[in-house]
Image (cartoon, rainbow, N blue to C red; front, side, top):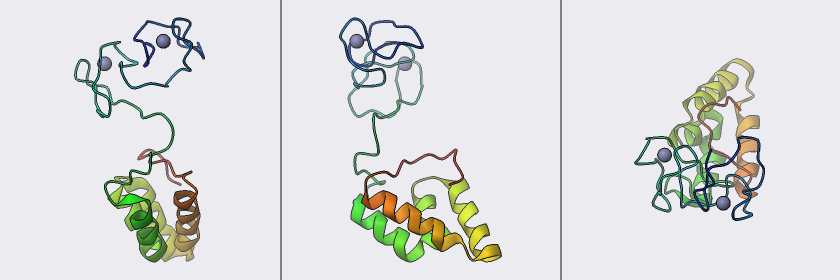
Length: 130
Ligand SMILES: [Zn+2]
Ligand SMILES: [Zn+2]
């Protein structure tokens, strides 16, 4: 693992870079996988092809829809997981459809997402169900 702020190699279980003092995962100048420089804002490292995890939340970026746009979609169509599909979270979307049709619970999960979006707690994660 490499420091994303200064690019120095560091231990996997280190919490703080001993070179620059920045917390692990903070910074977007270097790839944490290969230590190569990356363009700030890039989603994938051009050296090794590894996806670059953005530090903290989604920075209000909901696939170009904006926070308000995604919150509205979630509020009105969230029971069918539409907002999840837009964000590329197929598993969450399918899960909501199943919950909606089998248990009428999809809208409850959508409401939770809605609140998370409004409070900036929502994290786009295609591997999770909820
Ligand atoms: Zn560092
Ligand atoms: Zn890399």
